[in-house]
Amino acid sequence: MLAATLPRSPILICIAWLVLAGGCARLPDTGKTLLKPKTYNELQGYLLDHKAEVDQFRLQGPFAVVRHDDYEIRLSTTEIINTDLFLSAHAEKAPLVVFLHGYDSPKEAHTYQAIHLASWGMHSLSLQLPKNGPWVRNGKTLAKIVSFIYRWPEIIDNRIDVNKIILVGHSFGGYSVAIALADGVPAAAGILLDPAIVGNNRPDFLTRINTPVMVLGADEHVSLARNRDYFYTFIRSGISEVSIKGATHEDAQYPAESALATEELQISFVSALTSAAFSVASTGKFDYAWSSFGEVVGNGKFFNAKKK
Image 1: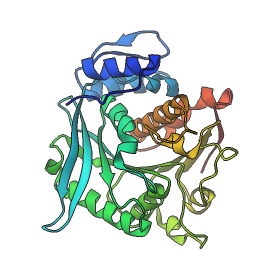
Image 2: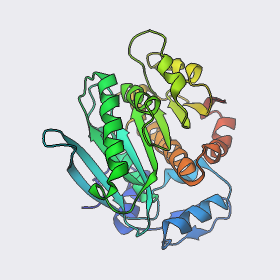
Image 3: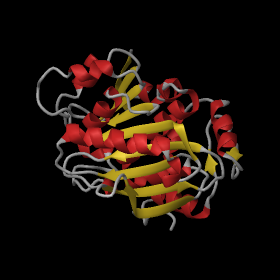
Image 4: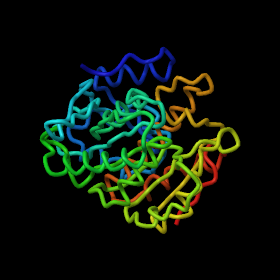
């Protein structure tokens, strides 16, 4: 099965067509169009050779997407994890982006984000763990799943590059991602979508994180995630953060069911997420993504940009 049925807006009609047809995406700077790259490496090389612009990732990428709903990963005879799997339709090894939902949210809350990343050549896996936590345990389970995939990538697909597994978590799911990273999970980086931390105790575990982390935050003047500031404060280095003007906590999902969320801001999160994932998958750092945010920080669409 290919892409999900998307809402009928002009942008998303374009996105749907591109996913279903494996079409071409217009890239910035030169005005040229990269027509159906034969390989992920070809697309990667093209993007790295041109000016980094986050808005290029608002359009769906050039690869078709193969979708497997309710794909089960059996960790043991008694432990089965329900997932949705989105595979990019090219032949090369490529990164795997693993999504973890937040409080009272299903894995389907990240469906369009996962499709979008797969269209840009990165395979995606959305996990269903207990919706109400406990979030430390969810983090331990996430680490177990990723370690399992790292050892036996063929349970997902033999095109998974196990050295480029990227973890993405929303809200308390971001807390769980941080738990897994602090425990030394074999992941290349973490991307936290308006993350939150349970409780007010000093989160010393964050000081153990040694992999690159990017926080993509909502507008704290609109909705402030619980203890979001802890991540930047306590992670010692290799962390970047930026907020999206006017965005709510729910906009960091896509699709978001809340009446407060808007499609335009959800797409802004998708484009930032795609730039961040592509950046760390291609270079091991978030520098490309940071550079791509320059124009939207300058015009105020993104703000509070900081890194250390």
